[in-house]
Amino acid sequence: MLAFATLGSAIGAQSPSSAPQPTGPSPALPASPRSVVLSVVVQDPESHPVRGLKPQNFLVSEGGVPQTIAHLEEHSSQDAPRTAPSFPALPPGTFANYTPVAPGETLNILLIDALNTPLKDESFIRQQLLQYVRRANPNTRIAILGLANRLILLQGFTSDPSVLRDVVERKLIARMPASLDQPDADHGHPPSLSTRSSPVASLTTKGSPSNILIAANVRAFEEQLAVLETDFRVPYTLDAFNTLAHYLGAFPGRKNLIWFSGSFPFNVVPDASPPHPFHVVDADEDELRETVDLLAKAQVAVYPVDARSLIEQSATPATPTGSANANHVHGPNSELSKGAQSQAAEHAMMEAIAASTGGRAFYNPASLADAVNSVVAAGSNYYTLTYSPTSAADAGSYRPIQVAVTGIAGSQHLQLSYRRGDYSSDASSHPQGSGSKDSSAVSPEQARAAAYEHAAMRRGGPPPEDLLFRVRVLPASTTTGTAPAPDNQLTSAMPPKGPLRTYNLDFLTLSGELTFTQQPDGRRIAKVEFLANVYDTQGTLLDSTGQELTLEPKFNDPSKLARTFIRFHLEVSVPDRAETFLRIGMRDATSNRFGAVEIPTSALTSLPPAPYPPAATPSSKPPSAPASPGGRATPPQV
Image 1 (tube, helix red, strand yellow):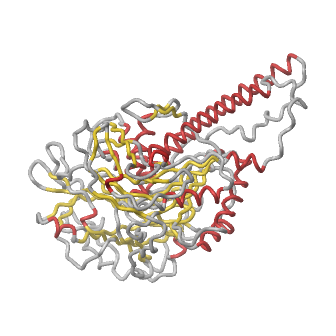
Image 2 (image 1 turned 45 degrees about the vertical axis):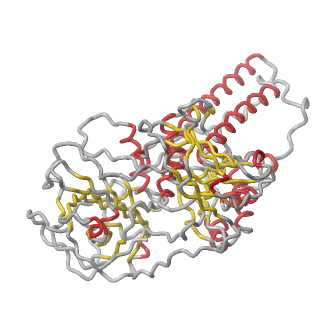
Image 3 (image 1 turned 90 degrees about the vertical axis):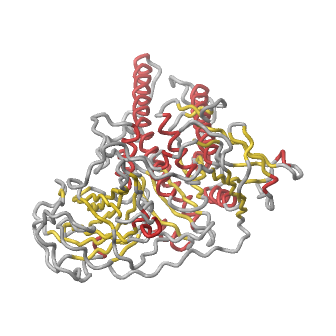
């Protein structure tokens, strides 16, 4: 939890133009020795949890080398409910990106994947979701997210079943995934090409050669469209899981990610030989592996749930064999064989991702509720093992992990779920920003960093909590105008004639949230960005603003530095005649970590103006403490 102590600032702030530039690389401060944290689910053959195991009951090896368990903790659903830290009520207009979570609490995330689910099946999935929330266990902390062409937070973490029911019954409406009919308005992704409503799909065939040829050509055309659609679904899905990994990585403890989908877009083949656990056929292999590693390091166990069996159970019974379709170019047996091969490939993908993160794949659940309840039961009863590897490894190399249970009856029949490998370097946990590299080429790391930045500040997505902060948002005055606030970048989507209302954003955080790096001359600096985006209800970007500061402490006491305030002021303008949303964030430029909150402006319009005068004329004198873009003194403490 972020504790805002009443201490003065002893950090110098420099604008990018006035900051001294380092003459060499900027090494990070020394890190602690690498340790590996594993969540291990142990169940008997009937999927009941096995409790009461001790460190001597576990055999752990990494890369074939036995490891010594430094710490073991058992987590059981029979434990008394844990209490999350209290968080004080905030004054009107003040917001924080902090979600209270009890120590050792297991979090559950239900991902409704509309992107990879045929349109005709989405209403059925919604009905399944309704069945679950109407029977949800009140002791289960769960969040609901949706995936279309981007990740959307439908409901944050709650253990109140009535809140979940309200979201699903009143607010969640089945609709076509946005990626299937329009590009991402603020990202410029092209739309995918869907065959789900193809005008040629309903053509019938007769026995003539010309009709058979037409049918064959139509099928070939549709198959090409399906390939193109998959080409778009793969990067959208990877982006969503990267965003989830970063978002969930800020929460302590184990997270169970229940991925409920009608299809799975990767062609993954398990690889029994080192250095990697699987081989990817139709996607960026390094990107998928990094995504899986991010999830594993964030203690996110992925449970893919194949919705097709539920969909098929609700469908009209198939026509008996031999009664029709005798003139199809591909006969029933050929179609079944092709479908079976495709499903087998997707099941291999499900197994690979589940095994790599410590989850389990579900192929034929009786219902979504049964699948979720099974995941929650398994994911609430587990052991946390911690060890420090006994041998060094090359940076970035994959090291397979093996865990076994011994010393109890029937141990050879137990079911163990845990992530099956670890990368020796955790540099991928927070992809670095592009920094000051002077190169026209964009590396994969820079591209992923940019993608995370875009996702962190995008309308509707889960607000990251990598950096914790408070922000006070108040109107600058009781009147509106036509001129935007300084340094605001209006887009062509902004209503051209206004009126505009300007808001004052006053940030407050602790410097301990940031990454300080040591320079060649011995100084330590941190670079932080303060950001604000304005969106309409459709997620279209209307306005944006932001400033970057280079911070240099005037002392070398780390404990004092961790308790030192950083305050900053931004101004942002929004159209006054329509509902809009403010996405306000902070970014640690060194580690590319984010914090963000999202606020509907309708919740702000009735608040009184900020109790300080407008910004003074910009000054050319470098500020001696964090200051506003106008160079005036920091406003009063939030």
